Image 1 (spheres, rainbow, N blue to C red):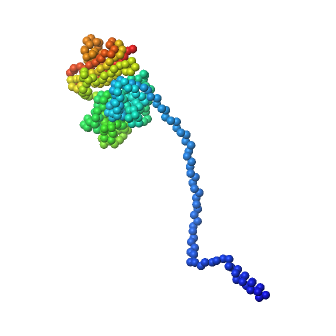
Image 2 (image 1 turned 90 degrees about the vertical axis):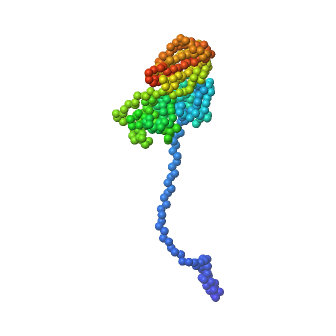
Image 3 (image 1 turned 180 degrees about the vertical axis):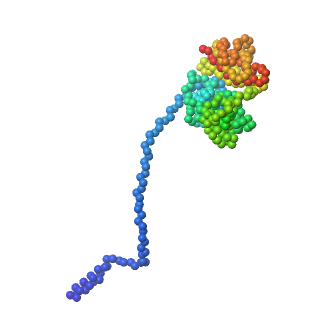
Length: 362
């Protein structure tokens, strides 16, 4: 019995031997406000926007240069010259300016592999169906551009009292960005000007989209839009002497050799004046056919006289070609012909801008 009692006592004393309690510092209870955890917002998946079809690729149109040409970064004689192409060189036409006076061509040395050349010295099989490049973002028919009608100063402000920044030549195409309050002066993009801008007299530019141009104040800030009521007409163009181009009988302004497979026509534009300014021009060409067509168009207050030389010898009684007329002329293929254009003497200053065109027949 004693042994049984001892066993029972030991069992009672060891009833808690399975748990070990370690005494430590008194724990401080902290009451935490339960925070609700929001479910994560679903991540939007990319919308299945259909891909836009690629822009149609322009099919280049082949042309051949009729004389050595400058390649410019912009469709203007004020543009930067980025290269030179020799005569009788094939070019790939991919665009045109709104006035169709310049072709945009593929030119690896140019920005984006492109450049601009004067259209009148590039011969093509037909009229290239090239897209218009430039002339405003919303109107590809030539809005917000102007074609210069005669050599013209670009000024730093809207008036002749402002400094000249440079000059533009006839048939240059410029981009319009503003006008003065009465519309007599137009603000244009001009790389050589402050902030890439300049001003031209509206009377000497054939402009489109003028009504939509913003009105620019003397400080250069836009002060309004649209054309104000009772806007005075641009002033009548002032007659100015033609600038000298330093051509002569020994160094003609242009020299074109016609061929059956290459150049078949030329078109040359210039101006002369009298008694001051450049009074004469020399135009040289060599036909390959026995018959050519001559055409002459003019504008201004003066008159022209034309002399014709064959192999440096004057041809008497060759015919009369006057402004606004055309004339067919028999020629000797392979012979050098030289036209001498002069401003006729007149009382006071006379100025004539002309375009002379020669076409091989048939």
